[in-house]
Amino acid sequence: TRTPVNVTVTGAAGQIGYALLFRIASGQLLGPDVPVHLRLLEIPQAVKAAEGTAMELDDAAFPLLAGIDVTDDLKKAFDGTNVALLVGARPRTKGMERGDLLEANGGIFKPQGEAINAGAADDVRVLVVGNPANTNALIAKSHAPDVPADRFTAMTRLDHNRAIAQLSKKVETPVADIKKIAIWGNHSATQYPDIFHAEVAGRNAAEVVNDEGWLRDTFIPTVAKRGAAIIEARGASSAASAASAAIDHVHTWVNGTAEGDWTSMAVVSDGSYGVPEGLISSFPVVCKDGKWEIVQGLEINDFSRERIDASVRELEEERDAVRNLGLI
Ligand code: NAI
Image 1 (cartoon, rainbow, N blue to C red):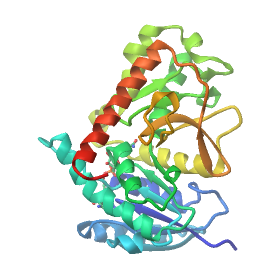
Image 2 (spheres, protein in one colour):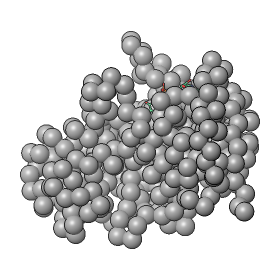
Image 3 (spheres, rainbow, N blue to C red):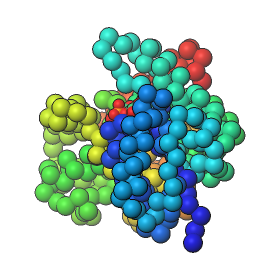
Image 4 (cartoon, rainbow, N blue to C red):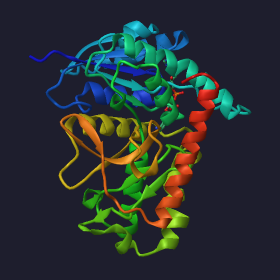
């Protein structure tokens, strides 16, 4: 039998945690033959709630679940971890300025980056879900100098999946026939979902749609503001779809993208497409042999350029703000 893979989930008692943990334990994160050992990290006030979730995980009798630890101790949570899903974050509360938000999250992601640096397994892969995800990933990465920078990623897969779903409805084609959607930039309202390279049953998606007004006024804002629309409808923020996207992100990273397709991940920029080196920005990526690579050579038209640049500018502002706060 294989040695279990250690999977750390922070914010384990939260809504996304509740939807995520059962899918990890059932084998959907890494594959149907990979046993997992879960480490649930919470703040002290929420450890009891996380222990309740751990009781339910026991009760599901998942054959692949080798063990569960619940802790508020960073060292226990991250020592030997192979996959770290950083979900817990400080949400923006009413009247909170962006600087306060970034500072509060710096207080979370700096020590987590340090703990990963000190104790994680050599093959550690980190996915930051907690918002502002790109900049939280940048903070964690900058405190883990011994971990290769390509192991720190942030989640735009939910945006990617939302874009596929919206396009699928518009062109009345099943999601399985939609390929090469790309999310660029920040996981925020400025993100740019790009269909110019996408395919609908093998045909160019922008040509199939043939409606720039729909792209500009319906598609892009619907994808970018979907989170708010879910809150409005559900009375709670998207959790199961976010958990599902986190499963997809790691599964694709480890097991690869399908031939003839790619995915979207926020990864450290190497300067591709004019995105300043070092920023954690979303790109179309191909995954193979457990590694991601930014898709190269795409032609970027003026419509896309303007929108990518605007989102990247926002990321630069967030980076400058956390730099001024001494967080990176
Ligand atoms: P939630 O509020 O239900 O749960 C967050 C949990 O994190 C709480 O249990 C809290 O106690 C815990 N937590 C806070 N600080 C912590 C720390 N330092 N260490 C460990 N745990 C800590 O929130 P929910 O709905 O689960 O969302 C989590 C995050 O995911 C939010 O920041 C949200 O904005 C973000 N999100 C990101 C998405 C993306 O596409 N990247 C999509 C949806 C949500």
